[in-house]
Amino acid sequence: MTMDLLPIALVAAATAFLAAMAGGYRRIDWTNRGAPRNPGTFTPQGVTLHYAAGTKGGDPEDVLYQTSKLGYSYHYLVDRDGTTYQLVPDDQGSVHTDGTRNRTSYGIGFLNIGPAQLERPGWPYAPIPGSYPEWPGAYWEPYTQDQLASAAALIRRLGADPTWYLIGHQDVNSGKSDPGPAFPWSEFERLTGLKRGLS
Image 1 (cartoon, rainbow, N blue to C red):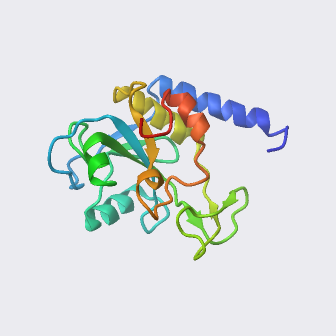
Image 2: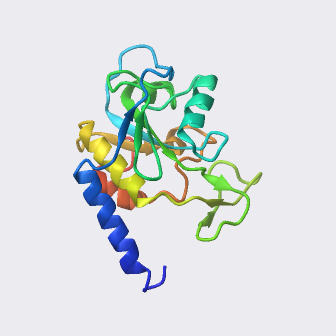
């Protein structure tokens, strides 16, 4: 990032953070739209992060349709402008990762296409976790400041404390790559007060 663009980026980050703190991001309730629930008791102890592309590059309607068709779900989708869509009630499990984490973690999907084969200006290039040597590198869509601030505010609202774990799907499921190398873990740890890992 060039120095002349740095103040713009800092202003964008500050604006996103203040909007989240003020509850300025829209929350849309889609819990009556048929997203699958994980059966059994749900005892939240952490958060699992995903990118959610569907077949249209991250349209929330399409993501809901595609995941539901396959029997999967997230608790929340976070759009690029910070809007959150709640798909599963907070007191029920969603179907987003392995059995243990489905019973103990909120699944949060960011509207983000993840890896792309074609070069995209401004997108970082990095290997795809779990896929080498079949597809060793890709261009990765950056996450927006609005997404990060909105998701961090959501996690605080859900009652997260320092004992909660914070992981990506890639941390617990072999062959998964989300949220991927474009996700700014250090910044998100700072915003949430959580540390990446299972404990």
